Image: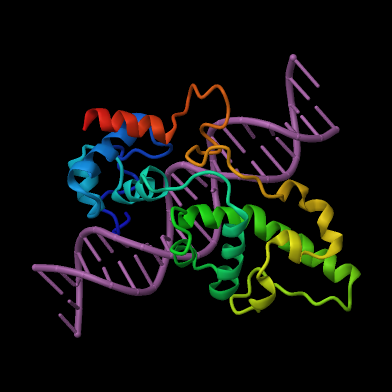
Length: 204
DNA sequence: AAGTCGCTCAACCGCGAACCA
DNA sequence: TTGGTTCGCGGTTGAGCGACT
Protein backbone atom coordinates (compact mmCIF):
# COMPACT_ATOMS: atom_id res chain seq x y z
CA UNK A 1 0.00 0.00 0.00
CA UNK A 2 1.24 3.40 -0.89
CA UNK A 3 1.01 5.31 2.30
CA UNK A 4 1.70 8.48 0.38
CA UNK A 5 -1.67 8.25 -1.18
CA UNK A 6 -5.04 7.96 0.30
CA UNK A 7 -5.87 5.15 -2.03
CA UNK A 8 -4.07 1.96 -2.68
CA UNK A 9 -3.04 0.95 -6.12
CA UNK A 10 -4.76 -2.40 -5.56
CA UNK A 11 -8.03 -0.73 -4.77
CA UNK A 12 -10.44 -1.84 -7.48
CA UNK A 13 -12.22 1.46 -7.05
CA UNK A 14 -9.21 3.35 -8.29
CA UNK A 15 -9.13 3.92 -11.99
CA UNK A 16 -5.87 3.90 -13.89
CA UNK A 17 -4.82 4.53 -17.42
CA UNK A 18 -5.90 7.13 -19.91
CA UNK A 19 -8.37 9.74 -18.79
CA UNK A 20 -11.77 9.89 -20.41
CA UNK A 21 -13.34 13.08 -21.60
CA UNK A 22 -15.94 12.76 -18.88
CA UNK A 23 -13.27 12.56 -16.20
CA UNK A 24 -11.52 15.56 -17.68
CA UNK A 25 -14.73 17.54 -17.59
CA UNK A 26 -15.41 16.58 -14.00
CA UNK A 27 -11.94 17.62 -12.95
CA UNK A 28 -12.02 20.90 -14.86
CA UNK A 29 -15.44 21.79 -13.56
CA UNK A 30 -14.53 20.96 -10.01
CA UNK A 31 -11.35 23.00 -10.09
CA UNK A 32 -13.14 25.88 -11.77
CA UNK A 33 -15.59 25.93 -8.87
CA UNK A 34 -13.37 25.06 -5.94
CA UNK A 35 -9.82 25.69 -7.01
CA UNK A 36 -6.93 23.28 -7.12
CA UNK A 37 -4.89 21.70 -4.35
CA UNK A 38 -5.48 19.08 -1.63
CA UNK A 39 -5.63 16.59 -4.42
CA UNK A 40 -6.72 13.50 -2.54
CA UNK A 41 -9.77 15.16 -1.08
CA UNK A 42 -10.37 16.91 -4.37
CA UNK A 43 -10.47 13.57 -6.15
CA UNK A 44 -12.98 12.23 -3.66
CA UNK A 45 -15.09 15.35 -3.55
CA UNK A 46 -15.25 15.54 -7.31
CA UNK A 47 -16.37 11.93 -7.44
CA UNK A 48 -13.41 10.84 -9.49
CA UNK A 49 -12.21 7.29 -9.02
CA UNK A 50 -8.64 8.49 -9.36
CA UNK A 51 -5.85 9.09 -6.92
CA UNK A 52 -5.11 12.66 -5.99
CA UNK A 53 -1.79 12.19 -7.61
CA UNK A 54 -3.34 11.22 -10.88
CA UNK A 55 -5.68 14.21 -10.76
CA UNK A 56 -2.83 16.56 -10.05
CA UNK A 57 -0.77 15.20 -12.90
CA UNK A 58 -3.65 15.36 -15.31
CA UNK A 59 -4.43 18.93 -14.37
CA UNK A 60 -0.88 20.21 -14.38
CA UNK A 61 0.28 18.46 -17.50
CA UNK A 62 -2.77 18.61 -19.68
CA UNK A 63 -5.91 20.34 -18.48
CA UNK A 64 -4.59 23.61 -17.10
CA UNK A 65 -5.77 26.43 -19.36
CA UNK A 66 -2.32 27.94 -19.61
CA UNK A 67 -0.63 24.78 -20.78
CA UNK A 68 1.03 25.44 -24.10
CA UNK A 69 0.90 22.58 -26.50
CA UNK A 70 2.66 22.11 -29.78
CA UNK A 71 6.23 21.96 -30.87
CA UNK A 72 9.02 23.39 -28.84
CA UNK A 73 10.30 26.54 -30.47
CA UNK A 74 13.99 27.13 -31.20
CA UNK A 75 14.07 29.66 -28.41
CA UNK A 76 12.57 27.17 -25.99
CA UNK A 77 14.93 24.46 -27.14
CA UNK A 78 17.84 26.76 -26.58
CA UNK A 79 16.62 27.67 -23.15
CA UNK A 80 16.05 24.05 -22.21
CA UNK A 81 19.58 23.16 -23.22
CA UNK A 82 21.05 26.08 -21.37
CA UNK A 83 19.10 25.39 -18.22
CA UNK A 84 19.76 21.69 -18.37
CA UNK A 85 23.45 22.36 -18.69
CA UNK A 86 23.14 24.54 -15.63
CA UNK A 87 20.85 22.45 -13.46
CA UNK A 88 20.79 18.96 -14.89
CA UNK A 89 17.56 16.98 -14.66
CA UNK A 90 15.76 19.54 -12.55
CA UNK A 91 12.78 19.48 -14.87
CA UNK A 92 10.37 21.38 -12.73
CA UNK A 93 12.93 24.10 -12.20
CA UNK A 94 13.56 24.28 -15.92
CA UNK A 95 9.83 24.29 -16.63
CA UNK A 96 9.38 27.37 -14.47
CA UNK A 97 11.41 29.28 -17.02
CA UNK A 98 9.29 28.11 -19.92
CA UNK A 99 5.82 29.54 -19.41
CA UNK A 100 3.11 27.09 -20.30
CA UNK A 101 5.46 24.13 -20.60
CA UNK A 102 5.32 21.33 -18.08
CA UNK A 103 8.17 19.46 -16.50
CA UNK A 104 6.84 16.26 -18.01
CA UNK A 105 6.81 17.75 -21.48
CA UNK A 106 10.31 19.11 -21.15
CA UNK A 107 11.56 15.85 -19.70
CA UNK A 108 10.05 13.88 -22.57
CA UNK A 109 11.38 16.35 -25.09
CA UNK A 110 14.82 16.09 -23.64
CA UNK A 111 14.86 12.32 -23.52
CA UNK A 112 13.35 11.71 -26.93
CA UNK A 113 14.99 14.46 -28.90
CA UNK A 114 17.90 16.28 -27.39
CA UNK A 115 19.51 13.50 -25.41
CA UNK A 116 19.33 11.08 -28.28
CA UNK A 117 20.96 13.50 -30.66
CA UNK A 118 23.57 14.57 -28.19
CA UNK A 119 24.50 10.96 -27.56
CA UNK A 120 24.84 10.26 -31.24
CA UNK A 121 26.74 13.45 -31.75
CA UNK A 122 29.16 12.77 -28.96
CA UNK A 123 29.80 9.20 -30.09
CA UNK A 124 30.48 10.27 -33.64
CA UNK A 125 32.58 13.03 -32.22
CA UNK A 126 34.68 10.65 -30.21
CA UNK A 127 35.14 8.34 -33.14
CA UNK A 128 36.35 10.78 -35.68
CA UNK A 129 37.73 13.71 -33.87
CA UNK A 130 40.56 14.06 -31.48
CA UNK A 131 41.00 17.77 -31.72
CA UNK A 132 37.36 18.70 -31.48
CA UNK A 133 36.23 19.77 -28.11
CA UNK A 134 33.19 18.02 -26.73
CA UNK A 135 31.21 20.86 -25.43
CA UNK A 136 28.37 19.13 -23.76
CA UNK A 137 27.70 16.04 -21.69
CA UNK A 138 24.04 15.24 -21.46
CA UNK A 139 24.25 13.85 -17.96
CA UNK A 140 26.70 16.32 -16.58
CA UNK A 141 24.89 18.76 -14.42
CA UNK A 142 27.83 21.01 -14.07
CA UNK A 143 29.00 21.01 -17.63
CA UNK A 144 29.97 24.19 -19.37
CA UNK A 145 27.15 26.38 -20.40
CA UNK A 146 28.80 29.06 -22.43
CA UNK A 147 29.14 27.09 -25.62
CA UNK A 148 25.60 25.91 -25.41
CA UNK A 149 24.12 29.24 -26.21
CA UNK A 150 22.81 28.09 -29.54
CA UNK A 151 20.39 25.48 -30.77
CA UNK A 152 21.55 21.98 -31.55
CA UNK A 153 21.52 22.75 -35.23
CA UNK A 154 24.33 25.19 -34.89
CA UNK A 155 26.46 23.81 -32.14
CA UNK A 156 26.57 20.31 -33.53
CA UNK A 157 29.66 19.08 -35.27
CA UNK A 158 29.59 18.99 -39.07
CA UNK A 159 29.32 15.21 -39.11
CA UNK A 160 26.16 15.57 -37.17
CA UNK A 161 24.37 17.90 -39.47
CA UNK A 162 22.94 15.27 -41.75
CA UNK A 163 20.92 13.64 -39.06
CA UNK A 164 19.46 16.87 -37.90
CA UNK A 165 16.87 17.04 -40.60
CA UNK A 166 14.20 15.23 -38.65
CA UNK A 167 15.15 17.36 -35.75
CA UNK A 168 14.81 20.60 -37.60
CA UNK A 169 12.63 23.14 -36.01
CA UNK A 170 8.96 23.01 -36.80
CA UNK A 171 6.67 25.75 -35.81
CA UNK A 172 3.32 24.61 -34.59
CA UNK A 173 0.47 25.28 -36.93
CA UNK A 174 -1.79 25.61 -33.97
CA UNK A 175 -0.13 25.96 -30.62
CA UNK A 176 -3.28 25.01 -28.79
CA UNK A 177 -3.47 21.61 -30.33
CA UNK A 178 -1.78 18.61 -28.92
CA UNK A 179 0.43 16.90 -31.42
CA UNK A 180 -0.87 13.52 -30.42
CA UNK A 181 -4.52 14.21 -30.11
CA UNK A 182 -5.56 16.68 -32.72
CA UNK A 183 -2.97 16.64 -35.39
CA UNK A 184 -5.06 15.08 -38.06
CA UNK A 185 -8.47 15.07 -39.53
CA UNK A 186 -10.03 12.19 -37.77
CA UNK A 187 -10.02 12.89 -34.12
CA UNK A 188 -12.81 10.48 -33.44
CA UNK A 189 -11.26 9.12 -30.32
CA UNK A 190 -9.63 12.27 -29.11
CA UNK A 191 -10.65 15.70 -28.08
CA UNK A 192 -8.84 18.93 -28.07
CA UNK A 193 -8.50 21.19 -25.10
CA UNK A 194 -10.66 23.67 -26.95
CA UNK A 195 -13.43 21.09 -27.02
CA UNK A 196 -13.10 20.39 -23.34
CA UNK A 197 -12.91 24.00 -22.32
CA UNK A 198 -15.85 25.00 -24.45
CA UNK A 199 -17.86 22.22 -22.88
CA UNK A 200 -16.69 23.20 -19.46
CA UNK A 201 -17.60 26.80 -20.02
CA UNK A 202 -21.01 25.72 -21.22
CA UNK A 203 -21.53 23.84 -17.98
CA UNK A 204 -20.10 26.55 -15.82
C1' DA B 1 -1.50 -5.83 -47.22
C1' DA B 2 0.57 -7.38 -43.19
C1' DG B 3 4.06 -7.45 -39.89
C1' DT B 4 7.74 -5.16 -37.43
C1' DC B 5 10.21 -1.40 -35.63
C1' DG B 6 11.02 2.96 -33.58
C1' DC B 7 9.34 7.16 -31.72
C1' DT B 8 6.46 10.05 -28.90
C1' DC B 9 4.05 11.25 -24.94
C1' DA B 10 0.49 10.49 -21.30
C1' DA B 11 0.43 8.29 -17.19
C1' DC B 12 2.25 5.58 -13.41
C1' DC B 13 5.59 4.55 -9.68
C1' DG B 14 8.68 5.32 -5.91
C1' DC B 15 10.86 8.36 -3.08
C1' DG B 16 12.07 12.46 -0.47
C1' DA B 17 10.48 16.97 1.12
C1' DA B 18 7.20 19.68 3.29
C1' DC B 19 3.55 20.25 6.22
C1' DC B 20 0.66 19.60 10.22
C1' DA B 21 -1.41 17.91 14.49
C1' DT C 1 10.00 15.57 18.42
C1' DT C 2 7.41 12.32 16.06
C1' DG C 3 4.37 10.12 13.07
C1' DG C 4 1.03 10.54 9.55
C1' DT C 5 -0.43 12.80 5.36
C1' DT C 6 0.08 15.37 1.19
C1' DC C 7 2.78 17.31 -2.39
C1' DG C 8 6.17 17.47 -5.93
C1' DC C 9 9.82 15.57 -8.51
C1' DG C 10 12.40 12.50 -11.52
C1' DG C 11 12.56 8.01 -13.63
C1' DT C 12 10.17 4.61 -16.15
C1' DT C 13 6.58 2.26 -18.72
C1' DG C 14 3.38 1.15 -22.23
C1' DA C 15 -0.20 2.39 -25.69
C1' DG C 16 -0.75 4.45 -29.99
C1' DC C 17 0.81 5.70 -34.31
C1' DG C 18 3.58 6.34 -38.42
C1' DA C 19 7.46 4.65 -41.11
C1' DC C 20 9.62 1.02 -42.99
C1' DT C 21 10.27 -3.69 -44.89
